[in-house]
Length: 271
Image 1 (cartoon, rainbow, N blue to C red):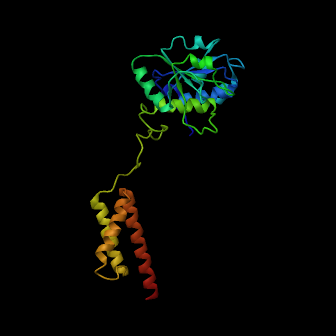
Image 2 (image 1 turned 135 degrees about the horizontal axis):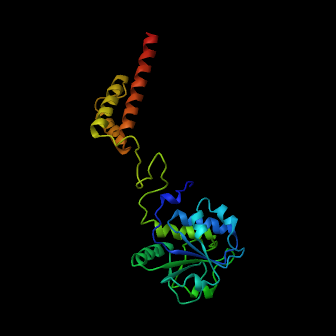
Image 3 (image 1 turned 30 degrees about the horizontal axis):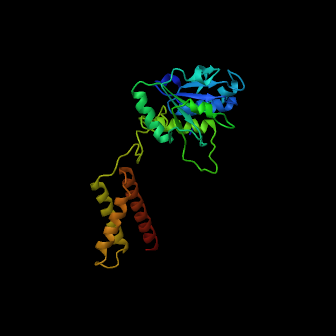
């Protein structure tokens, strides 16, 4: 999905820190920053980035999330990167053979919101592109996050991992869906969207059905009087299920009227 809001339109709320351990490519750092921006994460910490820092490729790949790149901090050790954190999450797809709780991204998101509400500082660890986090690095975390992925192909790249965890962190506190534009506000939530119209009233729907019934009568649609009530019920149920808007009802009445006029013109031409 395209589109970003500028930092001047944002209020950055407290959020977990994203710690990238020994990331190899600037492009991956940039795409991770973009994923962070999507879901209200803004504190990026880099532990020994392989190609040094700053990195122009990271800025380019961030697709506008430059404020995250600009404020990213670089640390020589993981211990230094998480020293101010009260609780640390390590993301990994591999079993580690150590006694440590494992939770899903969804469970992690709920736990993060609870802990942040208590004023705790949190950090989420993401490992190297090629082989992730070492066991020693995982041991520095309080809990492991492992996603329910295809066990035969479980590896996901850094940006995907940040996006997955970031979504679970942010989803229950998001007040809208999607992007706000100069023309329209962001969507308030899922469901039928009816811009510039409203749901049709029962009176409007019955007006249309009465209109349709009269024209069907004229056209000889109802072959016998005894079957007409059941056929009308089916027609009414069909349009009731459609949950028509006021605009749609007016359009349907226009369609029926146009068909009627066309039929009358053909009849007059033959006359």
